[in-house]
Length: 381
Ligand SMILES: *Cc1c(COP(=O)(O)O)cnc(C)c1O
Image (cartoon, rainbow, N blue to C red):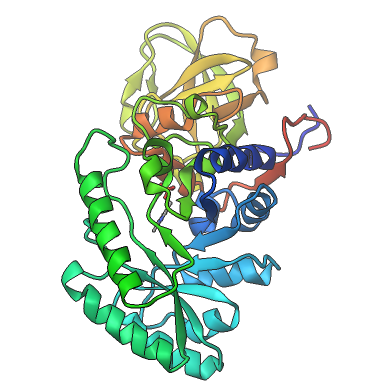
């Protein structure tokens, strides 16, 4: 009753730890890289990074060097890898901060120069494109890349410690392309070993491959989605894999009113009440990261499921509460959009025509994050 929050994303760090431990059992003896790009998939990169390391992740990974530097600045010392660069990436700073760098091609010369500047050899993971068509060396250019990296290594400017790749369709385990990618990866690794590199880690598995392809685990797996307790597979909830959602997105009922049958709701009047009913107003909208395209998404209020009705606006949306509610009790009630005690994030993704990855990462800075350990109470928050 005395709570002072209007919107929040509660992040259960105990669940993050449990998820990392669960995956650790699944992939052993392979090691885990906790992927904390995009501010930890919207959960908070530093809190999640710490929790992941406490639970046994021995690496952390980010897309950008700038993301990785923030983790280092927070005092987290485990090996880290950053894999998506531009001509403006601060490579020398990364090398000084002991952040490993992915190299697909053009980066090699830049990383070598940065190593000179930092007066410290760079630790490099060479990336092979085995079929995703994004970053990574084309297979035709791989041996040239190995040769050039080998020269730099002989000059003492870098050490090639890893070879890696990324999968395109691992969330659809019945498709044949994953086999083809693993075969191409094996060939690329063999060529790197023939070139004399003493590799610490070979890695290709993301969450879907971690859960569905034990033959993809190699020395290290890159765990993103599963660490946050989400499932990458259509129609399969995370609990099936022993994973628990870490984020619960909640708000409170900001207004309740009785309206007659046939009342229009929201911009465009895309919903009309079918009977005399109560409408509940929820002060969260697309500026909070809730997708405007989510039609009829479910929310949970006092243990009951209701549906979002009408178009979601910038700051708010409406649920049809039906004719039989306790109006006094409803005002101020907690509204769980997804997470513990509410619908799953995947139900929101389905309603919006997208995937759970996008729903989690787009929760905006207007929503305060609150970290908890295990189940949380209401008092004093
Ligand atoms: C984001 C990302 C991952 C993590 O993928 P999940 O499916 O979330 O586990 C792994 N590797 C690379 C290169 C990525 O960009």
